[in-house]
Amino acid sequence: KVADSRVFYIGTNGYVREGFFDSLMDRAHMTLKGDFDDTTFFPFICKLDDKDEVKDSNMWEKANPMLSKPRGKYAAGLFEEIESDYKRLTFDESAREEFMTKRMNFPEKSLAHSIATIEELKATKQKVPDLEHSSCIAGLDYATLRDFAAVGLLFRNGDEYIWKGHSFVRKDFVDRVYAYSEKGAHEKQRFAPIKKWEDEGWLTVIDEPSMSPYHIIQWLDSMREHYDIQKVIADNYRMDLIRPILEEYGFEYEILRNPRSLHGLLAPRITDAFANHKINFGDNDMMRWYTNNVVLQHKNGNVVYEKEENVRRKTDGFHAFLHAMYRADEIEEVNVDSFLDMIDNIDF
Image 1: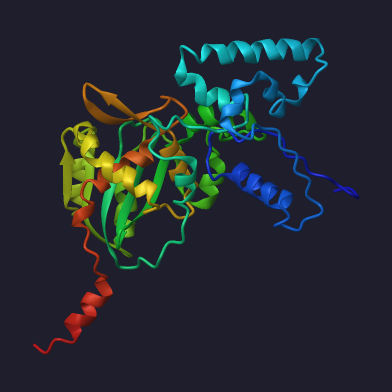
Image 2 (image 1 turned 90 degrees about the vertical axis):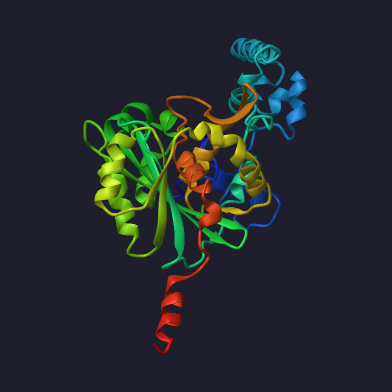
């Protein structure tokens, strides 16, 4: 509100993919390449250019200008701290993602454990076709009553899987963990911009002691006005609460008794779908965040999808999607309107 004002955005890419900072970085790269003509925008990016540069400590100053020689007392201490963190990676590879993200401003997932690369996650941001009255399979994840719950509808368009999802979160939890009600709490907001996703309609904040399962089923019921929900798929956890409500609302449902045993069966399909850009999350950045928080682990000869971190890095939306994918082959790629038109044309 002053003449010749300036706005500064200072930060690192962090853990949230396809969020505000990623879009700002895209704009910065386009400006630097001359593809975006904006003389009022000055991008100053400090990061490694290649992941292998981390092996040379002389390159670290590209991501940390303070490390440029000659180093002052604070810079020398910072270099020793970063060097100590880097040496720790030799016996703790699990810390690499955090080191590359925080220290080198080079977000990286371990390809041996991630289910999708950053580029594959970006490719899920596609235009969603008109799905009105289309058939779909619903999936839900209601593992806990006190933080997150997720539900969604899975559609098929040829080889493409389209997911329309929604989440419910408890206000007390997101206040404590993500600083939902605070202003300017940027350090915590980097893990999940709950307020932004709420404004965009991807989630509903629930202010109650424990989350009622009615929120999920009533959301599904409202979706029946627009889509043909063939079946609801859920795991066996909390089914004592969910089952009576599904029956009350007249949904056909299937309970997965041991969903972890199915992860190995679904993993090849999920991997192929991400690799070949067959998954469409539309503008739902929250689903990309959920997916980015999942790691693929091998346990006792089985493949399982696990949380990368138990408190802040939630995966509920991905598991709801995973449950629906179990019955993806049953989705009828028939538009209900077309079917009704066909019936109208039959001379009885």
